[in-house]
Image (cartoon, rainbow, N blue to C red):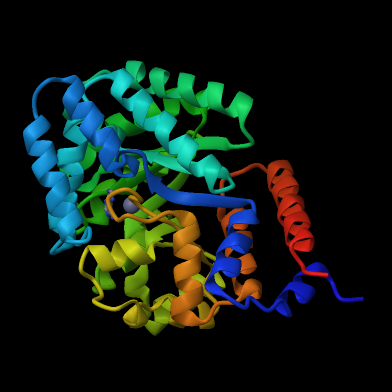
Length: 359
Ligand code: ADE
Ligand code: ZN
């Protein structure tokens, strides 16, 4: 008898609409998305309005993004925009609002599990209270989790270009909040200005505290920094990692050691790395046997969501139901869920896949 996934492989998706509703019905996990980058323009307007200032600047900036179709000239231009958005978050209640809206958006897409990155380093840089901010975030998450089938875990991110002491401070807080859902420590920001060698000891300490480790690396075209990040920091997953496509040895390393990549298609297009999705190396990495997951990175700043990313992979690379389910399975396997939660999620995915087989 054919198993459910094999039967799904035979599923004909006869229109974009049916593929999209089929994707919607799957229980999904997302591993790489930033809370700050998930704030929709309407919420940015609300945040600026509530303060009675910055309203005009925020409006002009939002219009500009919309006119440019959320394209940023470069990754560093995007990182600057990310900073501007982060500056609109001035209090724990602002972060709580952002959290509430993100969790609603995830639940509405049938995302059942999310590891959300909090730029803890940016909160420290703004001289805001990280414990008060994270407590406000957790209160929203706890309430949400008690009413919706969504589990949330947190990754505390340090900013590469702020250096070692800063990263160690972020790590200290991540350790402190391990029992409130912080599962991992990571680094983001500018790879050139914050090379991996600065963080060797910090990553070692993080592992010693029982935290998982991720790292944004290989987000540009140069594989050298990514090679260093893997060799020196030994992260369990890589944020982006598309530079590996230019380095056959690194592709083998990722495949043989089952190091997952958190690929973010629309993000890479919007930050100007590729002018056409057809030039993105997702399919190349996939065909080479790398464990790829799909993610949104900063969904509101790139006008995307997880369903959209899966549909884009289908349209651009001919991914059908078999490949889409494999992407969803990869996210479960690459997640930092404990084994019993993974098992439960695998079962839910299989059941949903079965239910959606026609006839
Ligand atoms: N922080 C938020 N989005 C990021 C990205 N795409 N790269 C590095 N740091 C980030
Ligand atoms: Zn990211």
